[in-house]
Image (tube, rainbow, N blue to C red; front, side, top):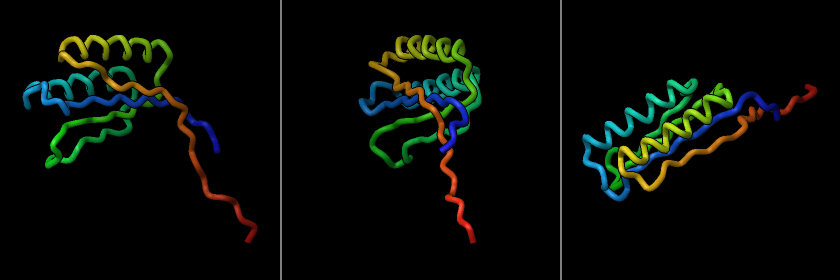
Length: 104
């Protein structure tokens, strides 16, 4: 296993239907914009369109510590703007798993 970079995962949701569809789309857009401003968005996942809840997750790489702090602060502001109880924020080390070497 080899450590490559640090990653941040940001998760948002609307399972309580607190947000209208328009508000949800703005919340997703604002969250993605912040993630893109903070670093390199390498993945974005969304709930199925037929699901009875809405959620989204963004993976952001190449964040400097100062950008992580900035992103956390901005995400807290989004919880206030969109009247959310929380936004999920996970920092982790990305590890690349590689095939075992064999002596053929």
